[in-house]
Amino acid sequence: MTAPARPATSEDLIKAEEPVLAHNYHPLPVVVAEAEGAWVEDVEGRRYLDLLAGYSALNFGHRHPALVEAAHRQLDRLTLTSRAFHNDRLAGFAERLAALIGLDMVLPMNTGAEAVESGIKLARKWAYDVKGVPADRATIVVAADNFHGRTTTIVSFSTDESARAGFGPFTPGFKVVPYNDLAALEAAVDETTAAVLIEPIQGEAGVVIPDDGYLTGVRELTRRAGCLFVADEIQSGLGRTGRTLAVDHEGVVPDVVLLGKALGGGIVPVSAVVARREVMGVLHPGEHGSTFGGNPLAAAVGTAVVELLETGEFQRRAADLGEVLRDGLTGLVGRGVTGFRARGLWAGVDVDPALGTGREISELLMREGVLVKDTHGSTIRIAPPLTITADELRGALGSLEKVLRAAE
Image 1 (cartoon, one colour):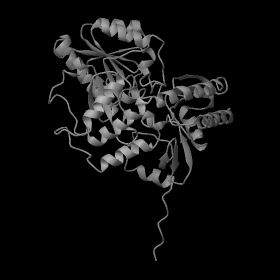
Image 2 (image 1 turned 180 degrees about the vertical axis):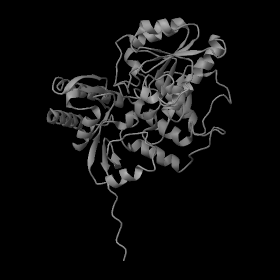
Image 3 (image 1 turned 30 degrees about the horizontal axis):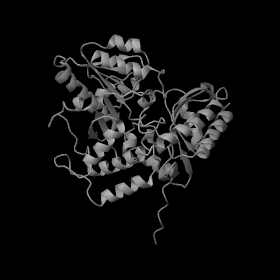
């Protein structure tokens, strides 16, 4: 009689990945098997509080019931038509998303990087058709230390050498200026500028928040210069910072907003370019597309996400719990934390390098049942689902305090 197969352990599954998966990530050694709300469970049954939330793709937590229900309903009806045909979910999704963002038209795509690439194409086409920039001369001004994705065009204007090395030749047409520097931005903008493309808060750089007035200054500068303001809200948008968009903190309305991550509710990849009508109107059939962009399943889930945000509940939760997060981190400054930057339920925490790298602190927190992810040096990012409770958040901050104390 054959003995029953031994259940695979985390160690088994991690080893199994080694020969068959590309080594383009260095994940923490936890193998997630189930999840609910702000919690995940590994294959051995250990539970962890998720303070990363899929880099903000899980703003509404794992398997939010309204989003799962929307997906199930649509799975029983229709999943894909391609854009060769219309489907009965897309118009409603686009209309409600445009209204939520305060713009006019939507270009549906799938991933965040696709949204950025689409935004670049849109800005260049607008520059040629509307602004009158000579053919192939359009430029886009971006910020140093940006993160907009990892396609070849996007890494062409990255300043992160690990994203660039070995992937040239690079796409021309971009000017890089320091972030949060209006004078440098103004000096870079000229008659060839199609757009200024920035993150309202730089996520991968360590949740870098610009000075008050910077976003307003970008809006005024681009308006004066006759170029577009393109805001990459893929990580910062859809409730994360306590407002629907991060630009809302300054009452700024860009010409183009790029969305992704949380727009798919952690269920399917959904992204979108949302823009003023006179900008989006430069696109014509055959000039851009996506087989899966705007598919009925994505539109159904995306509509359910918009419905959650229309209530304002999640924006309020992020703002209120953001105060809990800020208070807890303030208490750790000088006790293992050298500084932090936070807005809403999003923080970049600088740990004293003498206590360990960001990776090492993340691994120690994992052993305490809390999942975060490092970024540069000794910085960790905290971005829990907006469904987390105040007690859960305080417990996680207590675990961080414990880890830092033990590392001293």
